[in-house]
Image (cartoon, rainbow, N blue to C red; front, top):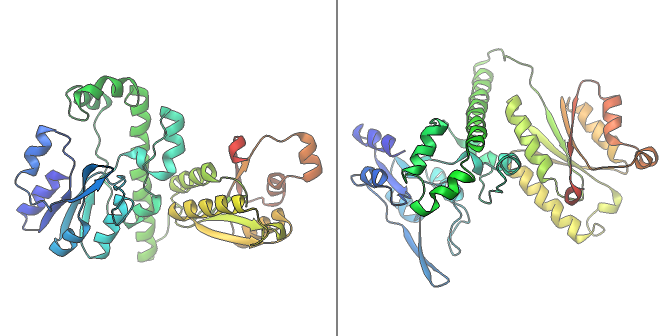
Length: 343
């Protein structure tokens, strides 16, 4: 980003650094020195003074381009926005172009994959819908050995954290997975841009458009389902996809359990942040409503969650999944195993 900033400035483009975290790296500090920086805001929190990007000052300065480091950062309590990506949205809305950076593990839809692969649950994430605003996404890539060498040289973390990082999150196996995910993410964005270009220019598309439907229950967490759905959508380069749930008479406002309602709202919020179109259906029979929606919208991929159920439960209560397999011939059915907390 700093190299781009120098190049833009040399081309006569007005560019400033809105926020950059040097972390004591000499090479980073050297590149900052002759670039204009907007001074950060100082905020006191629990007796300690922190610095955050001064969004108002950047907008008042009104550069052509702002450099924003560490997109997934969570702002200190007392800031106008909770997350830095929300600060970036303000800059964009003010007509300021932004160059920013994020590590692959901070993308919301990849959260479950990262946790299962590395054993680390990343808490700071950016919703996938944010990246739809991007004009260009660039994969900044080096080999695994090069990255681990940079770690040993103290160019990523401070000296006391190096061995811990090398033996945990930055193990070779983990880095291989993260690198592949990064390449896939950039390829996905390129495919989406190509699809939109062909649509805009009236050119023939390479493939028949796919339509994806994630079936959320009105009760219980749908986090794993929605993140899986977002990944499938990415691989298929799907433009629009649906997060669908059925409100039965027992789940109408005023009758639904307050805790179940709170979780449902969290599911809806996550689906929206991942870029899904949330659809509420109403009816007594969940399977009937989901089947009707899938047929009328020509859905090609249906995603269900399935907890362990006995054969007797399936025999007496039936299975929505089995009905889809039997009655919707043109749709691929994806069944995602859920643990007890997501049942």
